[in-house]
Amino acid sequence: MSRRWAGSTRATSRRRSAPPPPSATTSCRGRPRAWSSPIPSPTAPRRSGRSGSTSASNRARCRAAIRSAIRCSGEEVTAAAGDGGQPAPISVELREITKDTVREVCALEVRNDQKGYVAANALSIAQAHFEPTAVFRAIYLGEQPIGFVQWRDGGTPGTVVLWRFMIDRRHQSAGLGRTALALVLLQMRRSGFETVETSVVRGPSGPLDFYLSQGFVEVGQATPRGEWLLSKAL
Image (tube, rainbow, N blue to C red; front, side):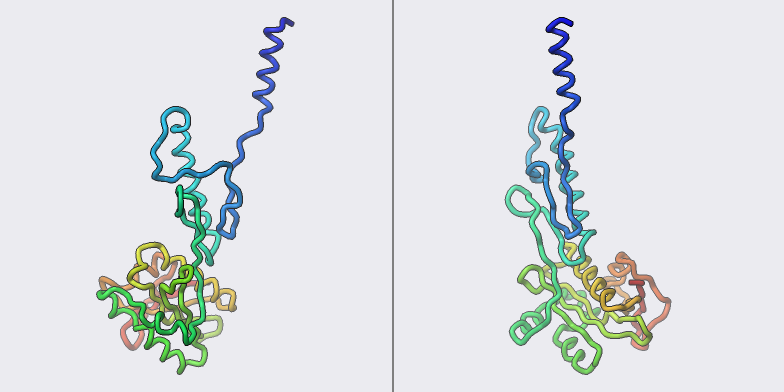
């Protein structure tokens, strides 16, 4: 065999034996485990030539990793933030309310058009002290309180009542309510409950559509106060 053909054969063999490029993987803790290369910002300008042809797939991988992080964990979400659009952890937590934090939690408010659908946090905390099974927590984004949740035992074994749930008006429409609710439901499930119930006031600014979008179903009954009952299996 001539040198020309032998060289071509060696080159072809090297191309065939080249390892496939590594791919990005995401752990079920919601954090990226390893990236094959720095992920460009989804809004970064497209480059010309071959690099531009791969920018769309890189952005798609980044978005898929973010969605996977949100699905995998009820405790943390991972969003594209920071310099260069790199994924940055944003921790959503439930914390006990203390004498040092009660004022700022009570200062959280829903929008004006929503105030007829959920009680003020100060009233909820006061009512909790007269309900032996009540549990109430502040919802934190990092070190900032952004919401409030309260639940109590239901009237039947294995049932828990989501008594109050709110996200401050300044933090709505950012997906934080869905993330916080998922964390609350996870806590209820870990506590041994099998079904969660809640009730809502119907209206144009009420939370009915939100709860339905999160898997709650209408029971078809109303409370003595006219609130509509919803239920969800845990």
